[in-house]
Length: 147
Image 1 (tube, one colour):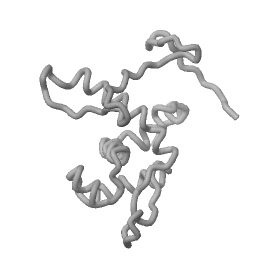
Image 2: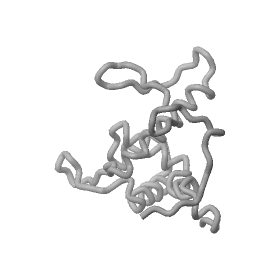
Image 3: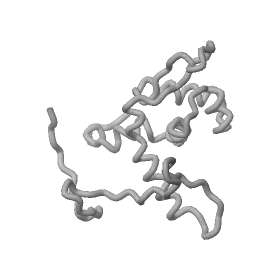
Image 4: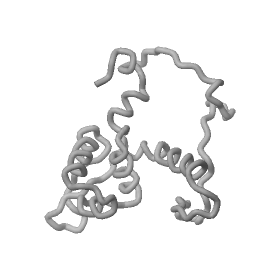
């Protein structure tokens, strides 16, 4: 539960849904095309009860939706919603940070490449609307009201 200060913070609210390791790993796998409970369970090696609770949270939060299996079987599939697909840059940012700081030279790791060309994905950068790169010290936090 968020306190009053954190309730105004978009990062704190996002972490209420995405702050669990397994939530992000499930979304990573969904981006890789996994859709069925059994596929997530096999790939993550996660206990079924924990997987079920995380999938339920992601569905309730609107990041995944349950729909009939695409092959016409009696199974249900978890499919990314637009809200879920919008988490993609966050997953890429975590991947790129991990690649940069958590692997030794020559250590094997997975790579994410553009499917059409096989080329590496450029490092993400925070930019102003006119394209200038921003650093943390170039930004300030301010309470605003939208809508």
